[in-house]
Length: 236
Image 1 (cartoon, rainbow, N blue to C red):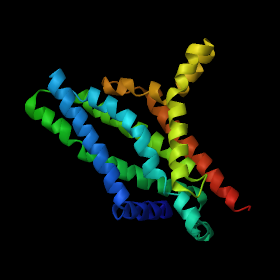
Image 2 (cartoon, rainbow, N blue to C red):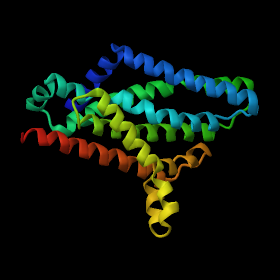
Image 3 (cartoon, helix red, strand yellow):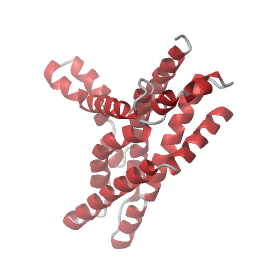
Image 4 (cartoon, rainbow, N blue to C red):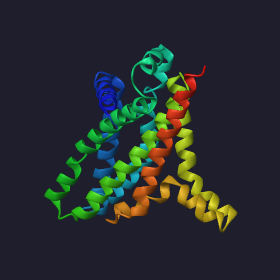
């Protein structure tokens, strides 16, 4: 675990010296601020439900951008070979990279807590759905970032990694619609697999174990596959 934390710390430092991280974080928070202001102005409701709901769509594109460099750049520069020959396991490399991106994302969410604070000044919000909504955003973000790590392990090109990440995430986001075509019993399977079917309850203040396990399973499966991809480099 020490190696994992060392790699995660290195990635966090790399993020904070990179202009891309600041641009992406600023854009994310600016868009969130726009949604927050417009929704508050027109709805007059002291709630974060609609703001967080809209930000899930933005996150589909932000997550692959945050992760596109993680393994693709290491492969392009050839530093992945040095990393893999060091006394560190492949899964520690993948997990460390993932934790680095998750930490940056959590910082972005942390800064956005300014919006609930504003709500508490202008209104009387119910903080239960706000807390569960942020938990849902963290779990959903973790799942999307893990998928981004997976696509970053597949290529040496950051742009290709980001495009693959967006395509994979959008497919998993919309796969539930296939259930309307196939009907039962496959409709239930497709709806369960869809990323979009598991976060609505969080915004209502409901934390369902089924949804938590789903997102943790996506994270585990994506990081497992990314580790397998890295392992294949040892055989080349």
